[in-house]
Image (cartoon, rainbow, N blue to C red; front, side):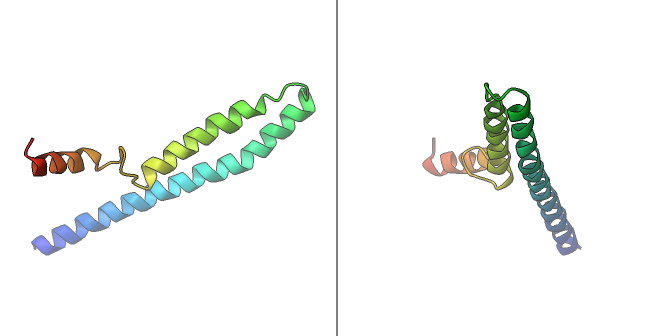
Length: 93
């Protein structure tokens, strides 16, 4: 009985992770499709001022943060608090 519960929990956790990864790739695809459009509109309407850089950099930073969160980088990932507590307990702080 407990084995089924644990297996179901692992399945739900994996399913959630797959959904997060899919969300990141959708975000990345939208960025890659829209940035050339934004650049084109900028160069056609006001080529003397390259305002498209604001979108490229701002959205690029957002993509970077999304990747950082999605792929569980340890700095402040989802398990950061739990890992930090374990680390501090091991040091006996």
